[in-house]
Every structure is written in structure tokens, then in C-alpha cells.
Amino acid sequence: GTGSEYRTTDTVILDPGDPNYVWLTDPARAGVGLRVLVKQAPEWKAAIEQTVYRVRQRSTPIVLADVRQSR
Image 1 (cartoon, rainbow, N blue to C red):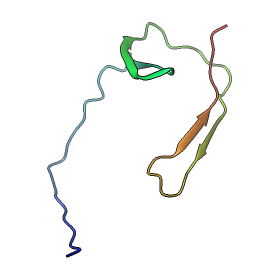
Image 2: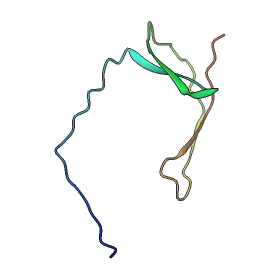
Image 3: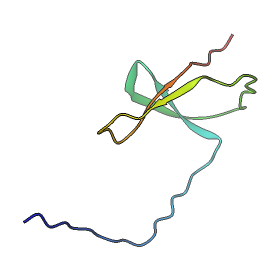
Image 4: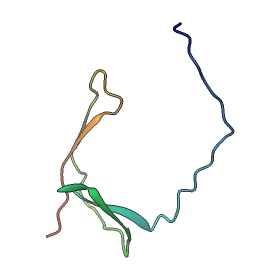
């Protein structure tokens, strides 16, 4: 038939970890990443442009964002 199935589990609590560690990815090679320790957070003065597109029949939105670059 076309019956549905569901399961319930106990509540899961995720540890967010140390906020000083971030995941650094290589835009050219999406499968390559490295966990790094942030020495000091940048002091951004201007907002970054960002647009979110919600596409039909797609579970996650497409986010188009500008790029911050060092000078």
C-alpha cells in the first residue's frame, strides 16, 4: 500500500563546540576543508550584500552573497 512510517527518538542535544574554531573551505575544491583556530575576529564596517532565492521543489535555498577580501 501507500502507508507511511514514522519513528520517534529521544531528544538529542548537540554540543556546538568551541566558537573559536571554524571550518575553512576551498571554493575551488569543495571536498577539501580544514578546521582552524581563529586568532582574532575581523571588525567589518560595511554590511555584505546577500540575496536568498527559494526555488520550487528544492529543499534548501540558494544564497547569493558578495565576497569579502583583504586589502
